[in-house]
Length: 257
Image (cartoon, one colour):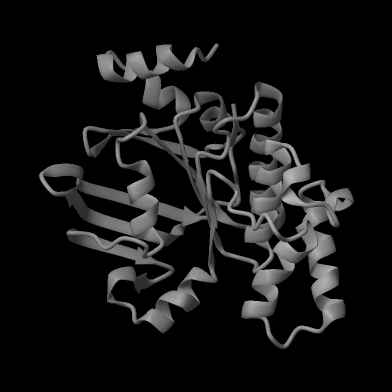
């Protein structure tokens, strides 16, 4: 179980969501969701596949527009931003994709250098090199700097994907199923890395998962998405201390002991 995090600032909401609704044709995915993410907090969003977890973070990052409701990120209402304003906001929000989203034709160094060249044009080659070494050291993979993604394990690719996200120093991290497809030992390493990122880079994060071991390891607080709404909220024990059969089935399916 994760220890109490004294760095959480409950006076400052870095993400604020009220009355969020999203449907695709006649299928209502989100049915009036309210959610806050506080500065310095790791918030886990739990739910089975297809319950709208990934839709939620795509709306937060401006990849999808809400049908109704307010979504405010770092004080900005996301769906009211111009394309340029949205690009500026996204530099402060790191998105760690399920598949790591690395460029197969580039080395690890080139994958990490790409966002710096694109968004930090004033940096010298020496500055870029120092930053690349710093983030690779932070994820424990400095030795892979000249390797191709195809030469890396799934867990290593996941770590490099997180490093590339960190390289622009985001204030918020969005993790989409960070342990999906990984063996238990590698999953534990990714969970430790998420906690290390929070401490070392002072990030706030939303972690989308249906892996309860991950949730229990990284979450300061968690919410459970059921039937388009958040039905449970609190610590791991508070969320699962219920007679709600839907929640109990979710717990039993994950075989958490």
